[in-house]
Length: 249
Length: 249
DNA sequence: CTGTGAACTTGATCCATGTCAATACGGGTC
DNA sequence: GACCCGTATTGACATGGATCAAGTTCACAG
Image (cartoon, rainbow over all chains, first blue to last red; front, side, top):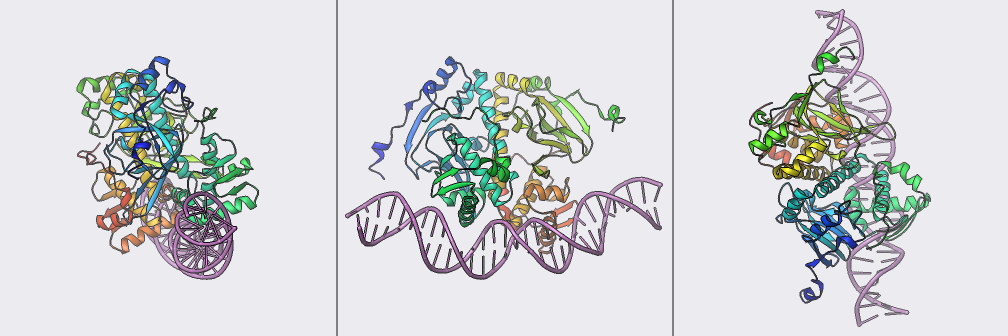
């Protein structure tokens, strides 16, 4: 764990947003080439983060927000009784750490679910730049607004069935991989995120499979009947048409 | 409904943020006098909205965000089965409509729970101004970040007991009225927001009263044992010390 | 003061989901 | 290929909260 540091730590690389396949999902979205150049000058890449490595921890002073480049991360907090609660999953192109702006320290921890890398966006510099670049300010506001919509979505679904179906649809959309899902997170994390027992997730997946809605084997999921799933968990459906991914990181 | 229009419609008043008792909670927070003057020039007051009057409806094009001046509003959406889901309550000093920035139309409706008035902040002008006034951009980002934290809080509590206790603590803090709460919303709305049955809310309030945690009579609630309530629903506790209200609208 | 309807409370019952307990699988390593 | 251990599945049972069904209280109108 110590000796591997030298190998792992390829941080502080400059990031070329202009050639990043995630450009259409991420902050540079809609910016001019000049604006993106300015953005690149304050961004650097961090990673790869091994599975289990933390990006930040609850209580850390707020310094930066992050954009996922590849891999997957989860955010979680530990409650008074020591139980872990998963607050969200973060896939390539998505921002991370926005909830720390207000309290000025992180109220949750963030850990890699698989080997991952992120773009680090030092917040004070980012805010300063957004002051000059209207399109950047607009993009940040829009992405934060999207996160607000997403949490409202989770809130609307109530039964276990609805939440799991909605979660799978949401994942399918966010990964852009069509109907073929590779779950980056263990059942326990899905359950925690949806506030269900691990066993319930397992049983529901089995039932969905019996009903012909999907095929599941461990972390491999193939969605067979999208309409059927939508009937169960419709509200998770997101509104973003641009999210159709074209490339892969 | 039609004839009363003339009386109700005292909209388009200019708002003097500088003398508003909510200044410390709302957008002008931390701005210079000049900046606030610029803000005032784009803000106008709308109201009073009678109980049941809508501020905006699901599907409306996104034009403005709103700051509650007095009263209380709820946001809700109607699902595919026609059931209403309460997404949030909005008290004086709080912003409303931020979730519509991203999709550019409102994904939920907003209705007054009691006679209310709001400041209307036309978004394009607000964004333009935030471009010039760094403190305003910072304030907007911070308030949006706070909303993200709040939704994470709701997500963390699981049992009915925890959610209701947390909700009451949150309300007490947000109203700043100490331990004396006047619930603006009916039980049905509390239940919908916390994803419980109305009867469960009623029973839990009765139980909390039996246990000496609070006194409740219809919409009047007096919190007697804050520590006891915190033990049940601790995670709702907010981090904002400035939220201690000094005045009243 | 009395009537009316909506909001709330209380009680009885049921069921979805949590909990506890085995068991099975599969990816690593040697 | 065989062992190992964390992850996932499956089963049996317990229970919190939903649902159904009366009542009760209160705000308000007349």
